[in-house]
Image 1 (cartoon, one colour):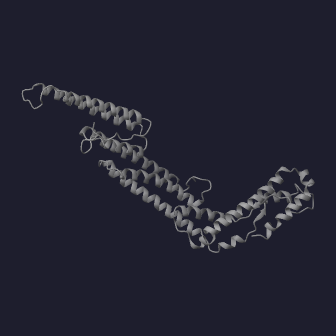
Image 2 (tube, rainbow, N blue to C red; image 1 turned 30 degrees about the vertical axis):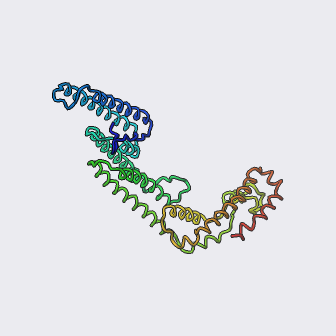
Image 3 (cartoon, rainbow, N blue to C red; image 1 turned 90 degrees about the vertical axis):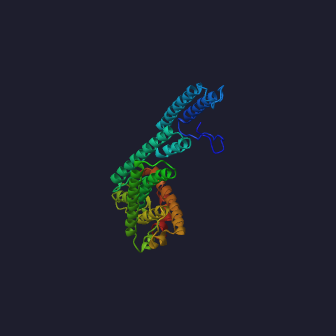
Length: 342
């Protein structure tokens, strides 16, 4: 039924996805079975259809036509049932592709055209949803990952919405769908939204480039580690030392890699993923070789910082006094990282 190819061979049924795939396939096979029965009746006529004296032909032919109309109604119901489970544009396009290949009768073609219009309306709804979300959050976009930096993170957020729109448009444009009024409107709104998001990403990139300063190498002159300021302030206030003791020994450590460089490294990583050019002054510091070298250095420093701080955290005030000599030994080992090593 509706699946004859050139030469008379029968093509296989289209593949249907979703929760109702089996139900749709079974319904189509039932329609095909009914069609075969109708054709069987015509083939089994005991008279010649060319015999002008055979008056029964009109009755048999009318019965066949009524049966075909019933099949058209059944086919339309199957199409409606299949689209009830299609909640996305991409799923709807796949159904249109499947039903379009077997839509040869006018009634079925009209049903497919109606679903095409509904699909473009669904696309318009999603475009409006993306536009509202973009307009509401573009000044302070929610980061998709806590590691995303300020400017590239905003661009990644916008890029995700751009890809969402582009994937749906590419799916729609990739099929030969019947033209509808909603189609032109959807394409116009899609083009406008894509342009706005792309301009936003370019503006984020421009704002970031303005923050990249020259002479970034000076930030590499910092020592590898430093004493945690809050813990040092508590110690100098006398909470852990006797009166007159003004030393930094036994105070928690912090990694001293400059935070502006860390932000720069993160920005470069994500702008490269977005395929944007990196300013030369930033590439001098954040080149591929330097990036990996500094990452390994930071991780090694953090191993020392975490181990040292974990020792201090498990010791009480009295235990620190008891192990003061060992703590002093550790402090002598890490002293080069507090002032000399860079």
